[in-house]
Each structure stands twice: as C-alpha cells, then as structure tokens.
View 1: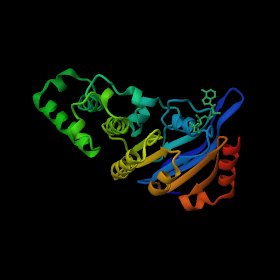
View 2 (view 1 turned 90 degrees about the horizontal axis):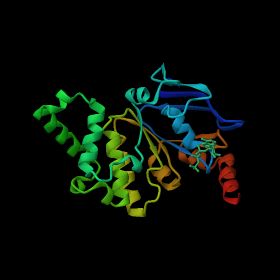
View 3 (view 1 turned 90 degrees about the vertical axis):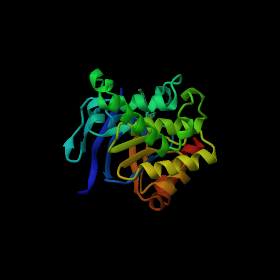
Length: 250
Ligand SMILES: Nc1ncnc2c1ncn2[C@@H]1O[C@H](COP(=O)(O)OP(=O)(O)OP(=O)(O)O)[C@@H](O)[C@H]1O
C-alpha cells in the first residue's frame, strides 16, 4: 500500500514467555479514522503503547511516512506527530479547563521563559486555547476547575489538550468509555470534526461508535490481527464472530 502514512510490520511485544502482541501488521492510510478492536486482552492497548514508543518493541518495524521510528523515544515520536490522548489523570484538576489547554500549548512551544514573557505571545496563546475549547464545545466551561467538569466534558478536555500538541496522527484510547448515550453522541461528533486534516487511530469497545465513525477496522485477538477491512466486512468475518462469542462465553 503506497498511501500508508503509518506502516507497521511484524510488531511483537513479549512479557516473559507471553506474547501480548504477536507479529502485527498495520497500514494506516492518511486521513482515515482507523479502529483497533478486539475482545479484552487482545493486545490493543499494548499495540498503542508500541506505536507511541511508551513500550519498547520486542521486534518489528514502524515507519512514519517512510521513515523508521521504531526504537525512538516517546517524546521524539510525539514530536514527529504521533500523539496519544492524555488520560484524565494527566489533566490538572485544580486548574481551569482553559489553564489546562494553555499549559498543553506551552508544552508544544517549549519553555523558553523570554518567549512566554511577551504580551503578544500570551494573547496569541489565550486565543488559540479559546479556539480549541470552542472546537470541543467547552467555551462555557473555560473557567471551571477541570476536576469539577462532568465526565464527558473531562474527556473532551483530554482531547483538547492532545490537539494542543497538533498531532498528525491522533491516538484515542477508548474515547467513549464510561459515557452515557448523550455524551457518546457528542464525543463522536467531536472526533469526526477533529479528524478533518489528520489521521485518527482509536481503540474502541462500542461497536456502534466504530460502525458510525471509522473507515477502517482492524480486529485483534490474542495479539494477532484476525481481520481487517471496513466495518461490514469485519463484522461478518467468521473469525471475528468466533473471537467475540468466545470472549463472551469465557
Ligand atoms: N506489563 C505487562 N506485563 C505482563 N502482561 C501484560 C502487561 N501488559 C499487558 N499484559 C497482558 O497482555 C495482554 C494484552 O493486554 P492489553 O491491555 O494490550 O489488551 P487490550 O486488548 O487492550 O485489553 P482491554 O480491552 O481489556 O483493555 C493481556 O493478557 C495482558 O494481561
């Protein structure tokens, strides 16, 4: 496949004798929303950790636009544009939503004190932070302590702080987990919106979200890819049905 922005070949992660991810290949096309699904323990989160460099590979190769990134440290991979959504725990609960986004923007630009002293820079920073809050439907929550936000808004703030880093490839780990239907609808709309102009890879357990949102679905079971294609293709794949039924009966 020539248009893959991210090309993954044979990635494996062993924990002792156990292979949590076992020879996985992925071709992530530019601009797509790509879901990684599979029963519990299939290796989805471990795969994410390998893509972001937060876990070292046991073997395999990952390249971004033709350049090998396997083995690079996590911050270098993030600098090259692959960023995973922050977990809620990394949002500062005592700071407002606005301060959290401003802080994330400052991280992107570095910590040069003189740069941040300039009045104009601070104004630009404020404007950009408000834009991001606006994109995520959070303007009216701007001055609310992050710790006091309702759950769905916290997840939206998590996406806002990730977007502050301006990722080319945005990795979302179960963005709708623990949400009620109304919040799910809102987050799905947000993901569709923020996916414009970038590539999204998401781990998602809610299959109706996957069906409605994702162009491509890769199904993992026991560390291996068992199916890959659009939702309709993978949903009628026998191995997939078996893996899900097997998991349900385990
Ligand atoms: N640090 C670790 N040490 C040992 N085993 C691990 C470690 N991390 C994950 N595993 C094992 O690897 C397997 C895959 O785990 P992983 O969390 O990647 O699955 P998952 O598909 O994300 O599951 P879930 O949907 O439940 O989050 C599991 O059996 C898990 O117990």
